[in-house]
Amino acid sequence: MAFMAMMLAIPTPASVVLILVALLAGAAVGAAIGSSKAKRDVAQQVEQAEARGVSKGIEQRKREAEAAIGSAEKEAERIRSSASREAEDKKKAALVEAKDEIFKLRTEAEKEIKDRRSEMSRQERRIQQKEESLDKKTEHFERREEQLQNKLHAADERLAEAEEIKKAGTEEIERIKRSELDILERISEFTKDQAKDYLLKQLDADLVHEKAVKVSAYEQQIKSTCDDIARSHISMAIAKCAAEQVSEVAVSVVPLPNDEMKGRIIGREGRNIRSIESLTGVDLIIDDTPEAITLSCFDPVRREVARIALEKLIVDGRIHPASIEEKVDKARREVEKRIKQEGERAVLETNVHGLNPELVKLLGRLTFRTSYRQNVLNHSIEVATLSGILAAELGVDANMARRAGLLHDIGKALTAEIEGSHVAIGVDVCRKYKEPAEVIHAVEAHHNDVEPRTAIACIVQAADAISAARPGARSENLESYIKRLQKLEEICMSYEGVEKCYAMQAGREVRIMVKPEVIDDERMVLVAREIAQQIENDMEYPGQIKVNLIRESRAVDVAK
Image (cartoon, rainbow, N blue to C red):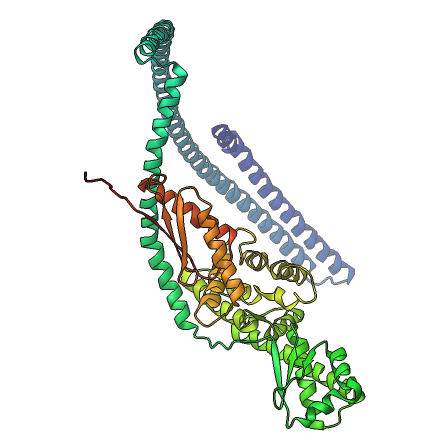
């Protein structure tokens, strides 16, 4: 199509001739127009000369005009001959140029047609080769498919034969098995169920031994690795947290300047002392102790308010119901201010930010709360510090660990006002003030009320045990101490085969004497583990308790 368009665009010789003829005609017309114009000019001049009445030299002018007309005609003839010659020359040149252009275009078109034909030939050869290759591959695939179909058919036949052989073999095996079982039952004089029970008993005895060995090996392996790591982390945490400890008591003693002040505090018919006790909720003990009054109350906040109010009354000297009420109000405001300051101090010391202001006040109330004569606020600060150190050593979020450690005993601030354990109260308080779920879980799990599920809960539990169990931190009364030892011995004596049991080292170790004919060496490991687990589940104690089982083997003979 491109070639045909090019051919149509090339001028033919006939069109060139027509163009030249048009050019010549145009030149002739131009000459004729020029001659007629010259004649009109001359005639106009003659008419003008005649009109002016100029007669002189008119003949001469006519001759000149005629001569001019003749020269104009000659010039026109010359122009016509020259134009015809130029047209002939241009015609010849155009014909030669057109022939050259036609020859050039024809040569290029023939070359392009030749190239296109060669390219089409090559493409046809390639297509033919691809068709031949595809035909060969198709034939190959058809042969392979036929071979695979044959193999698959043969495999199905073999599988069917194998199934038949297997079925026959299974029936034969079952028959032989039944006959062998009959022979074994006759030889052993045991039925199948009796033999099974006998084997299970033997296997159970073997498994007890294997289980005891495995438990012992695993315990040794765990102790050899975990104890060293735990001891390293705990010792480092304790070394970084050297906290002072002062035992707290449930009574406060107010010194008096003299014994006469006792009578003024009692007042006429005891009205002053009744007013103090009713306003503060504290019992005043006035005995023979010289120059001192004892304040007794299990609520430390009330006891502190009473102590401050009584000191102010003693300094003021005016002791009557009106002044008592005034001083109690001032003391209560001072205590509230101190509670806020103590809470802010605890937050700053532990570097815990973003606590609700009400939680800060509850933390401040812990400064007047004791647990086994240990100040709970100082204990919470110590637990928060230890938790942060342990969390940093273990690669856990130290900020969250400090927050959980600081709030783990927050429920103790409200145990005098709300019924329930301090753990449940603390969980409710933390949920009320939108604490994170990890903190709430750590508060709930620090006394094993629920199973610890996070690393922070375990860290807070360990830090609480470290702070409470270190020497001098807490003190117990004799009655609770004896009850704990008795319960420990009762748990140990409840197991079969235990002959004697002794709680030693202030309840940190228990030694158990077992009967050798009831508990053998392999079972001792399992019994020790069961006793330790029951102690963990049933008792609350600081630190750890070592369970030590002792089995004595004796050989007795009689000389006759």
